[in-house]
Image (cartoon, rainbow, N blue to C red; front, side):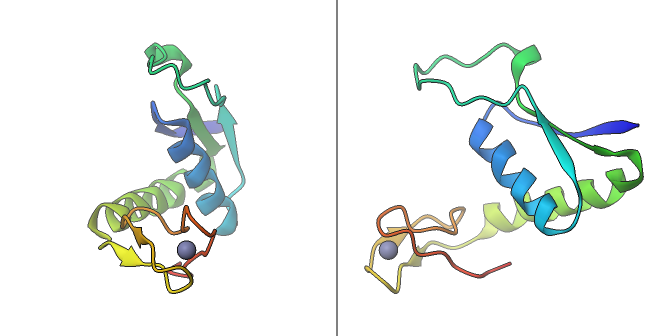
Length: 104
Ligand SMILES: [Zn+2]
């Protein structure tokens, strides 16, 4: 039995959290996941990306998602040591050169 643990109008965020959960050893499934062409139109609620996990992992997955979102909201901006680009705190990868922090 699967449980829905996350819904977001932002496909990138759902995809990111899927990676976080998979890295934590929690298998999860993304539903309604597709990257739009960037028209600026938000999909209607029913088609938002959803993250589903096995019911036995629901509590753990919710805790990880909450911690991840809080950490992102509180993360300070950082300067890429590779190319000196200023990167916003919620990103762990330099958009300019692809450098990735190992914060997790
Ligand atoms: Zn960089």
